[in-house]
Length: 401
Image (cartoon, rainbow, N blue to C red; front, side, top):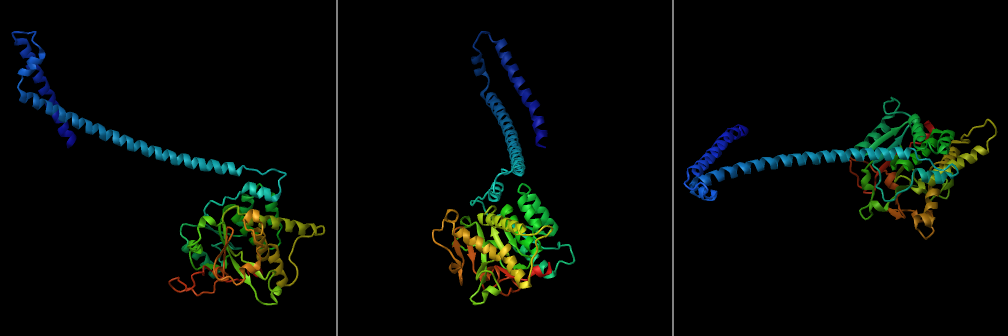
């Protein structure tokens, strides 16, 4: 409707202008002094006519300016939108390019295993904890043999941590992931394939996935009580941390050697870490070296295997890839002041009967009940223990693998 009236007004305005010009021309031509200044002629034109005409022209110019301004504003908005879309596209292309460059990154052939690991996955303490949750089990989620109690724990990890990427690997997909993440470090793949039991492979896999990707690894027989962000105390900044672990065993029994390799052991059934953390690097390198050493002791046509009673196998697993080996590696990190910046000797006694979280270097050590809580979970999901984060059923999975 606005365009219609605007189109109707334009001919009227043009007509008025023509009439004024005719009047001016007539006065000039009929004037006795035809050479009289044109300005004097204009002065003889009635003021009302001139004012009306000027107002009409001014209003029309104002409308034209508004239309022009609106068009320019629309063009500017469209240009900004196009620029934003282009920037997003360029950022995405840049990220893909960086990933491709990283995938082509090859460590020097003569480098040691630790140098290769650092080269492929360097540690940046300033990054945030990645929002990943990793789990592994011999059966996939769609397999009817996937036990219901494990299925519930898997659901709870996802439900209590919205926004986290949650992945469950079975034996085949874990093997594929190892080959993909460490395709430039064949020693890692060879070690994974040489480990004689699934439980050993599961242990090795957790260190590898956390080293490459970071995030949280949780055994399949765990059930979260609180969301992952709640693990960090209010007086500790996430930027200070590179890893979160908890105590698994803290024995006061004189016969502790019959049940564990170390009197106090840090658990590795739940770990949160930033990618490339030195403790994970050392753990992977230690397992590769110990596995290779065991292979050198074999006779021709002989393969690695666990031997002895069930209890002896448990202790060997713990010392090879499990909690005892993990504990030794963590303590060595604490006592390497070049890495940890800790100038006093740390032993198991510094964590004996720990009741509250303890920050040592960039590792937050939680008390035993944080990741192996016995707290009952009410219907509303709340618990009386503010430090109860994870329930661990300790199902001795190795017996069924």
